[in-house]
Length: 322
Image (cartoon, rainbow, N blue to C red; front, side, top):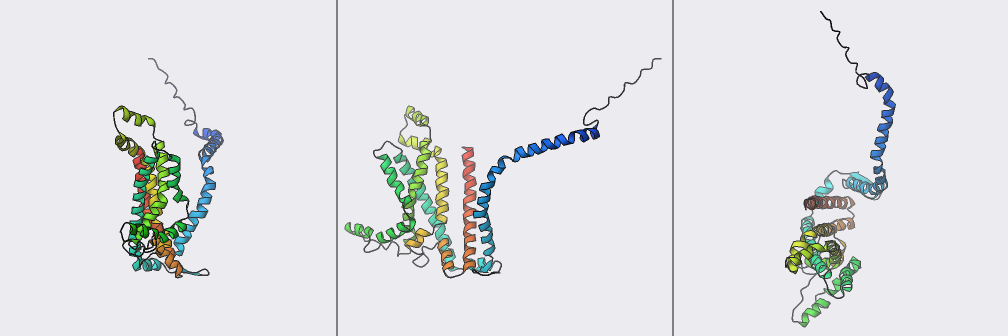
């Protein structure tokens, strides 16, 4: 009978087999390695710190303070917490309903016209035309002019009897309407002036987008026998989509927040026909209702955020898909 000796069980070696000793001897090295990895992972984030500090001081802190004071009745010297009373009173204002409607109409009209006209001007000004640089300067020039100066100038030009527009129309036998004194034309007249002033920026964005399109695509259309319309529909329009998204967002935000041009040309009148939310808020400040006006600012902030952020995410998703 042969008795075989049972082989000795292998003794686990290493960190698992001698866990206690391993941990006691490797912990300092692992700790240093973890600390180094943590520093390496967080190193780049420290470069955000200056910008984050400035952003917090000039945007986050005032926004939080505005939200608090919208819940108070305040003056320069004291404040009293009153809950949501400012918001209840603000939404009971008759001018708010018309102001909200006018704000949306104004934003949609101005952004839509800037998109269409900006694209048309950009296509023309990137084509083989004479004096292209001069024409680009002419289109962009109104952007450089003060909004208040534009408002005062067009208020004079659109006077029903003595304005230049009325004089020119009378030469061809057309009686000029009271552009700014008629409730049915006042808001649209201001919106058209806004488009005249801002279409240069939209054109500039479109020109940058069109010039970034590779020439190979247009040459491929030429090889296939396509014309100018084919180039525009199949190349320019889809590949300039990022520029279109940028123009829509900037124009929409500007339209929702617009105040200075409307106030200069009509003061929100006649009646409430051209009042927007910003002008309603300004009237509340003028009357000394600071808490109520602050609540209006919060409402405007929320309105712009609810419209712009979903639109921004949608445009980003479309850019990723394309």
